[in-house]
Image 1: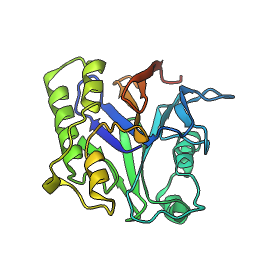
Image 2: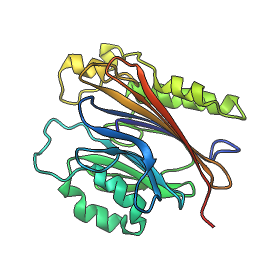
Image 3: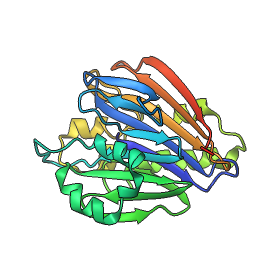
Image 4: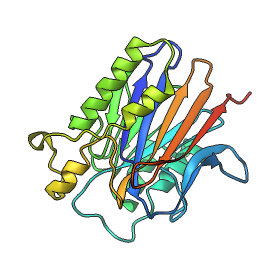
Length: 253
């Protein structure tokens, strides 16, 4: 997962709005969003190579999502970061500051966002900081929380305009926001240790490339009663839509 935009307690009907793009190699085997057996309590897509996921929710109202931190060196033999999202949704009580501090070195660098009932936290493994998200608009990509990368600022501002102008949110309009292929100017690009051409490609909210790019967009809306609306749209390397899933979850009694 490469970029998240979050509106927390900024909409009268939906105190939590999350828009996310997953960027990954197109050849990596992936299952669409579904309820995971045998308990069918966790709703997420699945990385069929390592078994974890990049974003999901559960029937108790928990939500978790992960972005990789772009670092020049990635170590081989580390645990799959996708299992952190699975753990946050199946054993949320374990996701304490102490546990994350103790185990984060088992993984390549990451941001993990997780929580329930609009109380979200973000753990950055490079800084070792667990930070509560304040009410407002947030962007999380491949650096620190609320870094001012061009695509982060652009998407956050677009979501803010969308939420401020409408009582009812339109899913297609939100999807269009996440399919913006506009690249930043060279002078605006962050310096993250990759070559200039890839820095340009990765500067767009939506990345279209035959080998590596945006594989899916996920939208999660949680209303004031705790009900969740979950939409996933999947794409191929040419930007064509491969399918769309939609789920609605009511809070457990």
